[in-house]
Image 1 (spheres, rainbow, N blue to C red):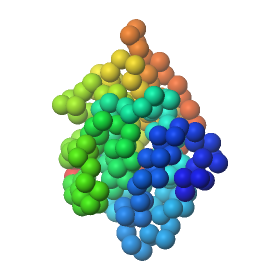
Image 2: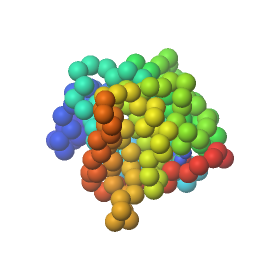
Image 3: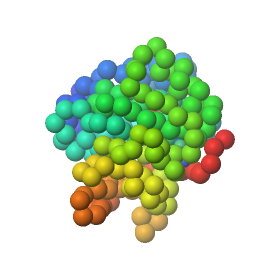
Length: 204
Ligand code: SAH
């Protein structure tokens, strides 16, 4: 899977190495394990999906933006099965990952337990509020897309840090949005079209 990602243009060695360190099949139901290394999204229960590996790689590469070494504290919105949190744990000092569906939060804890990743902190709650306790973040990544980016996420970014999230464009389709916080404001870039599950408020 890692060599395929490299062929598809993923260049950041930290991203490739970190993906290579996490067995993706351990995060999906055993009936799907044989598809775990294909470039496909897979169901993880509760109507949610784990993103395609090339989308995970692309988003983390955008988040890192060629950083030299590990990132500092990173916030992930949408823990899902916990796969991306595990990948992020190898390239960030601390990973705070928040999930609004209790069943998924509990399942992610089970998935991550054998990996013994002391720098991953799983939180049950509404990620639209961000997670102020870990702020400011060196990066924020969302695995769910809303109509716009909640202002709390921008508030919780450190200067020089990036937010990567799927968001609705004015044209009415979902695309990847990168926002960089600078000393004087925010720089936004809208990139390629993507298909993520909806960002929802509240918990269930
Ligand atoms: N990164 C995950 C992808 C999960 S899919 C993985 O590796 O498996 C996106 C997840 O975002 C879903 O589990 C969904 O429940 C969650 N989500 C949607 N809105 C949310 C919110 N406001 N706060 C936290 N999680 C949210």
